[in-house]
Image (cartoon, rainbow, N blue to C red; front, side, top):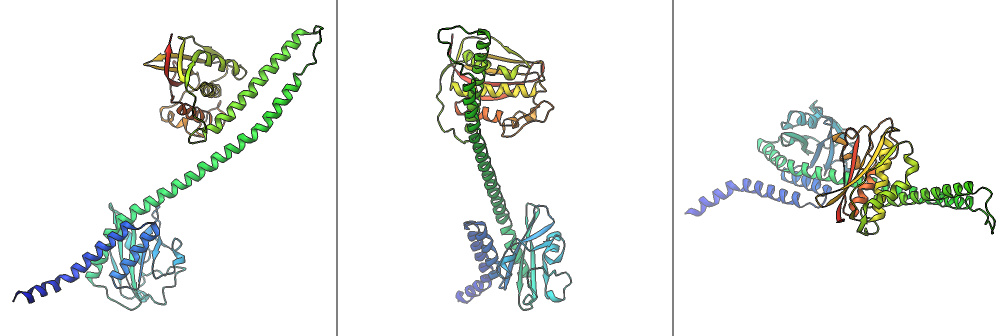
Length: 424
């Protein structure tokens, strides 16, 4: 005798069970969609079928909140996806977004609130419409619409069902949208980074030809005829020319190294691994100071003595880092001020400091200043903003740390920290 009662209960529960099964299926399909487009197609197809409608459309609110843009549809002109826009607060869709309340339109042809969207021919077949908001974290992210070709009075149950679908999908859609936007921004940044790297590589490659020409002409200018057993009539002038030649060749070599360092700085990983060996720090500083004297002629260079320290470093890269730091000090420090270079052993690390008496680096810039093309505008600064970035990348390639701190009594102090090899 219990069977008829059980059957009656099952019959009463079947609509609710069908709805729950549908919501489960939509959630499963939405969370397993492989692409953003597939996710949106799943949303509109499942919604249309669940409400037994002819058309389902999803509009997403633009980030500026001014318009809702058609994001997916299975009945309207698909060409208008991403193009058709409804002003926030206008039409049925815009009003639903603004009020955050569902809206039923039994006859769109006679309802003044309905907005005929340019580019989408709806007058031929749209008769009735049900529209509900998609809300996530107390914010409207879009509107979900269903439409029928024949007039239909959507019931409260229809409204509740569509709103339940919208509530379920709002978070999924918004998170998917954010992920897609993040991926697009990442791809744009990757393309920009590739273009930047290619540009720098091309420019630095083109620099090699004029450098080679300068090198050749410098050699020709220094090509004095042999004395062949006789003394020079002006030995002092001959020696001076030789010094000028040697200094010019040193600068050509330095430019070659600079080109190499720029090329290395734009690579994610340097082409060759750093050759880290015990390096005489004082000798490296002395070599750099001798090579860059022409560019610091308007400043006082103070190389402070220290212990005979050896650090684990790639010597050529360490010299390049020091050149970048000294050049940066020259850019920002006023003429006739002092640029100081010091080194010391601190807790097992050799710290090399390059200090200037310029304007200093504000705290909010102490990280940004090492980013590519980041440079603070001052009346003394010039350059491309690549030097400190190249220095940091070169340091990272051999296990060194690089940072900036205030100098005493004023200015900036850039520090390179390298593991100590020995102290004698």
